[in-house]
Length: 257
Image (cartoon, rainbow, N blue to C red; front, top):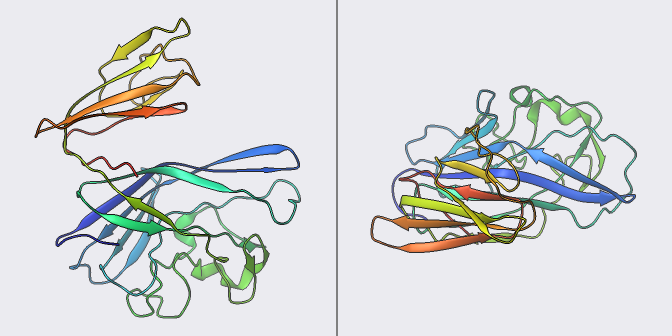
């Protein structure tokens, strides 16, 4: 990761994991995540904020190895086939800091006993073996309080592999702007456009604005756009072909990879 001096916070929101097994499509909703890199942090920590449904990790910058980003406990409903591929983990990255770059990967492991109380897991925040209370060689994301229950499956072979093997690396280089104004529009079934100015949040295509009771006349699958301007008169339109439109928080840097 590359960033300048001072605390840097990265957010990972609107996350889903999608895969298909035995002709059944699974879409898993993953909690939001917030990672803050702060040179003044005395120790690296990961907690789960139940009020906002968000993983919150604080770490010192430039530590050796990886930092935990986000995770999901998923009880398998049926016996899955081995070697499910592809598996797609996606979401929206944003930050208050412009010009940062970072890399991310995912992994999966199987446990015979686990907990949906994320704060009971004892998630190790970083790989570094001295930077957190878990001073060992376990990988970031290890549920330290449940290591005795790991078994082979998913991307792990059990034993001392508590997170599973990491995927290929995805790189995110953010084009960021300090938002001062925005507008959004989407296609209707008749092919016309319906425009709306909205508070910060998400415009769900074919649905409602988060935190707003009004229903916007956007049809699912037909697309929408968000036009963003910054304080330096930078003007850019982001296109979304389906799913949802992101309406950024004024004053926050919005990053698109």
